[in-house]
Structure formats: C-alpha cells, structure tokens
Length: 255
Image 1: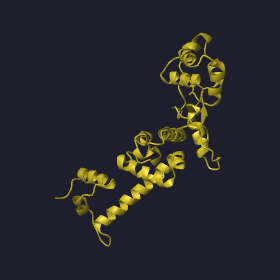
Image 2 (image 1 turned 90 degrees about the horizontal axis):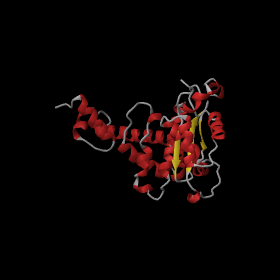
Image 3 (image 1 turned 180 degrees about the vertical axis):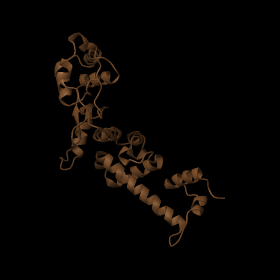
C-alpha cells in the first residue's frame, strides 16, 4: 500500500538522518541507479550542503577545532535537527546548545560560547538596518522625562556574556593571528554584537555596561538601568558609557 503524503514526508526526513526504511525505498523509482542508492546520494548531499552552511555560520568554531572535527560535529547536529525553514542563514540557532552537550567537545568548555558568538554575529549581519537613536533625538525630550524613558536595542544587537575571554579566543582564531595560546584564566567577557552598514562586529563591555544593556532589554527605564549598572560596577560612568553605546548604534530610534 503506497505511503500517504504525510507519512512519505516523515519517512523521507527520517531517512535523511539515517533511518533506512524498506517502504520508502519501495516508493522511490529506480532506473539506472537503484532506489536505495539514489536515496543514499541524496542523504550525502544533504549532509554536505548543511555542513557547509554550518561552517559558514560558525567559522570561529571550525577554526578552533579543525575541519575534520567540525565535519563530525556538523553531521551529528544535522541528525539532531534538520532545517525548519528554507533560508540556510537561519539554520543553526540550536547549534551552540548542541555543542555544549557534545561529548567529543567536553575538553573545550568554551566552545559553546564561541558558537554563541558566531551565531550572534550571523544574526546581526542578517538584521535589517533600521533607524538608530541619536543624541539629537534625546535632546527633543523634556529633561524631566528622560530618566523614566525606556529605549530598545537596535535590530541585530546581541549581548554575549561568558566566563571565558571570548574576544581573545576569537582574535586568536582569525587568519594570520599569532599562534600564542589564550589563557582561559584571564577572566570572563561581555561582548556586544552589533550591525553596521556592511558587516557585523562586536565590542567589549564592562560589567556595568553589560548590566545597563541587560536592564534596558528587560524594559527598564534609563534611571533603573543605570541603577543596575552601578550595582554591578560602582565605577560605572553613565555619561561616558551611554555616549559610547550611542556611537556604536546600539539603540533603536525612539518610537
């Protein structure tokens, strides 16, 4: 009895990740290439194309572990999660969490956070460039309203915090970088990933700046966010940090 369309689609998806089924083979036409071999070729091409897409999205991860290791990691992830949308640039959102639980990477505890940084850079690069908050916009607000004002992050902005020095790990992985090992005991990092006209980039934030941005993301006012920043870092300087964040285009224009 032929498989219903829904069952055929489910069987085909399962086959892609390695679950061979005789009823699926029977449903596929074979000519000069037997049906089983035809399905095998398609499975190989899916793994290759998705692995290539993941390598493009997570270049720092691949640079750190090498092509062969990354290929095995990518194949394991593809078996775990096939794409749910047609745009491959959007594939891999669950990859950092998968890396965190990948047994073969247990001796690289920072790798999942590196994957989070790669993904954040990808998200920022794909984001639409919208209007950004300017100093002149704030000058139009009555002074008494400014402390209670809430402002939003610009599209594509992501805060990546880690107990590891991700900025130095990222720099050491770039082509042409010195081969010196990164001391993982240097301390943690707070990296703000942003979109600019032609690419994505990140900047390093102090503990106070990271707390300030995180509070704004939770919908807190400027005054409340500044309080959270001072609590995280008594040396936080609101005017200096806010000017830096404005210059980087970290905030969306006021609605």
